[in-house]
Length: 126
Image 1: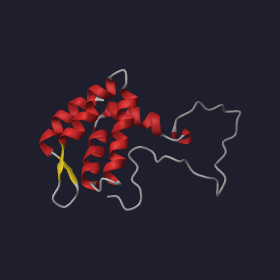
Image 2: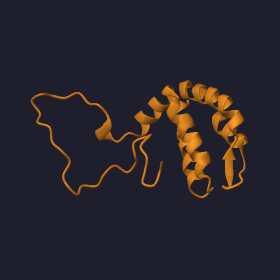
Image 3: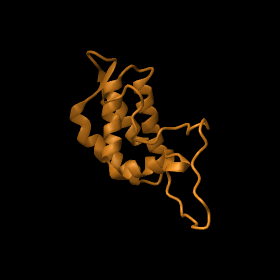
Image 4: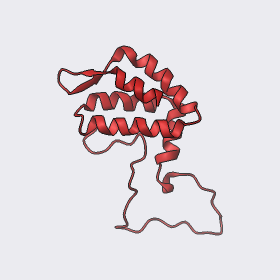
């Protein structure tokens, strides 16, 4: 995807981390992200962006670059809407409620959703 290529081009060797995201390219990345989110392949392109966040946090050992990219994704309303729809657990999605059907809470000890809601911070994140 074009956005993915631009993110990769904006990465440079870091001082304290393996890579850092060039802050001078934030405007270009934000515009490209908006185009990606609103384009016909928006969900697929944004999934690639989330995969980059995960890679930067994990084996690329660049949590600051991951956080900067995550912030870009969260700041763009269109991207955030697409990602929330794509990654939100079924329980977090609004559903029409039939008043005749009683509400039921999940059972204690039942497995939770496999994917965190987009924008939710995991343990140890600021």
